[in-house]
Image 1 (cartoon, rainbow, N blue to C red):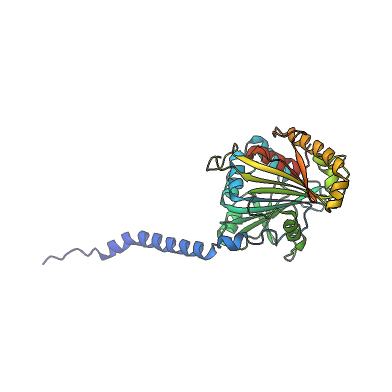
Image 2 (cartoon, rainbow, N blue to C red; image 1 turned 60 degrees about the horizontal axis):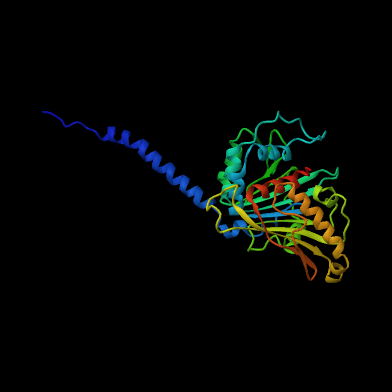
Amino acid sequence: MGFLPNNRKEKRAKNTPIASIIILATICIYIVSCSSVPKEIAIAGIFDHFEKTPQVILRSGDIFLRDIAASLDDSTIEALEAIASDKPNESEEMKEPSKPIDRAKIDKLLTRAQVAGIGISLTDKGQPALEAVFAGNFPDLLTSLSFSLDSNWKKINGGYALKSGSLYVRNPDRGQVHLATWMPPVSPLTNPGATALATKSGVLANAVDFAIYIDAKSTIVSQLPIMEGVTLPFEGILMSATREATSPPKGSPSAMYRTIFKIQMKDEQGARTYKPIVRFLWVMLSSKLGSYGIPITPETPIEQQGSVFVSQPVWISAQQLVDVALSISSFNN
């Protein structure tokens, strides 16, 4: 009497890999869904977790971050390497030899962020110190894993350290990636001064895609190349830029930005009193900006509006804005 072959075990064996894949996929989807943070939560209070009060503050929206990613070339990569490079510090452990910055990781950071806040301050030795928060599509677990699995980074208390430079990432939290050129504090630390300056300066305005504010009362001003030799009782300088609608829809170094400069005085009376000196300041500032290839000259009009001097709009490319921002960040002439 013949028997039909029993294929149940064989079928189960064949189905096991498929079942495993389905289970793993389900787990991954669950992890991502649990780790993802709503955009509104991620970008809210972009400066709230800053540990230092910056003296120069920058804010960028998502479209300018895409333009930055498209603008990266050898010179901008070298500038980023210089900012994150080692500085003599006998108290730190010996770091590994310098390695090229991972271009793919930079691109991913810039293209997944919805907004970025950057601050520049000074160390006790008078060197520039940078702090930045990128907020957007950064699930906490997956972002932590990306740093843990990257051989260029090592795990430390409170986050991760770049092996070949003075750059540290705090443990990702609520869709934000928080970097600084100093080690994470022993316990979480926040400084309300960053948010206060951001609110006062105007960099949080929704209508602009990119803004830089230089706090004139800070000690950093005299060390900025564009402010060399200038002494004036003003509050600060704001550069705000809005992307032109006719620019390419995707990130592009040639995207054009309608840019306005504002010199904020303490009050309207001070603005009237120092008007001739402000115009001289504008000549120096516009000349320096012109050296970056920006189409601006000392003849570009700047008008007093109450306590603020406002320039006529100038159109600047994304690449030029990146060059200016990197120059300010690294204190290069």
